[in-house]
Length: 430
Image 1: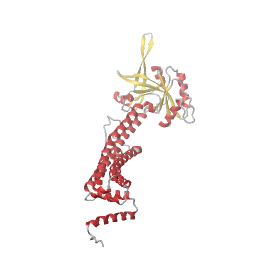
Image 2 (image 1 turned 45 degrees about the vertical axis):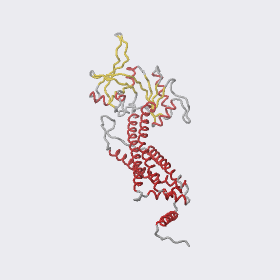
Image 3 (image 1 turned 180 degrees about the vertical axis):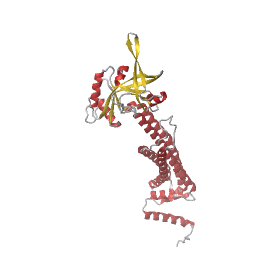
Image 4 (image 1 turned 120 degrees about the horizontal axis):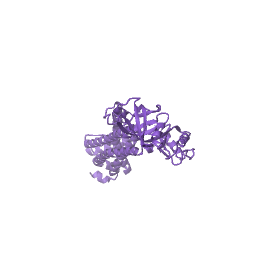
């Protein structure tokens, strides 16, 4: 007959607790990996250092997510503001007519463009270099002759009647007022019996437009096409085409260029030798620079998440080391290596998930508050905005969350592999 052990002996207490634990878990109906992950995520005094490492890993992940969200939000905010500022001054579609094309042929091409599906407006323009002269002062400008209403590429004056329009910055610097006569000088001279004479026309100032912050915007001057023809001689004739929106403009450009779009034909209504450029092609260097800036910022700030993921590896390794006897006992009771691996992957996911949730809330909430109340001002005389804008795009946020979760799970899987490969007998001996 086997002697009975006292119920309170240390050797019987461990197995009793171990047996009670699985029975409770079976009553709950939870799988073993989920049960172990929930059990190990709870902190105890004995596991205080492991809990501290878990807090460090979760805090690092939260810091990385917050930094990524805020950095991408501020870049997106500036880029959207800059895109709106530049695209408001850029033609949606610009058709460069072949050199030497006569005025009658250019007007016929404009009428043909107006009949293309999707076109909401087509305006014949003349473009060339020149100077604005007023009381002994001269300023080099780009002369753009238009017909009808002022084109949309002159914000603040778009839709106005024909006349002379100069940048608001130039008008403020020279103290110009509406109705003030200004002289326009062309580099193309006129041959006279007395020799070459400069082409000069004087027009009253009809208004100004928002000039922006770039040198190109400060140098553009709009004037009636008939006057520009006499000054420039039709050197560069163009057709500025408008569509319903930017996406529609791309489809219109495809039709104008003779590329088939859907059920439309592939024939171009333009004279041979014409070049069609869209708003994307006109701003290609800038758009590429903006994309590159965003990618580099994302890669640089993502290093914070990578470092936090390494801290998660250290945290899981410490937990596995402290739980070696328990893991060995579970293995002898039938827990498979796959179940143990899943348990520690879930544990890493729980620690990382808390950090991701905290970082997302702080990052998105902080971006919304900073943008709503303009809490970060910048010098308005230097930038085209007087505050730092923030814009959280759903795609950027999804990319941050997916990347962070992928790095965290990969780190957890690396650490969980140690638990799956433990020898049960060796673990119980320790």
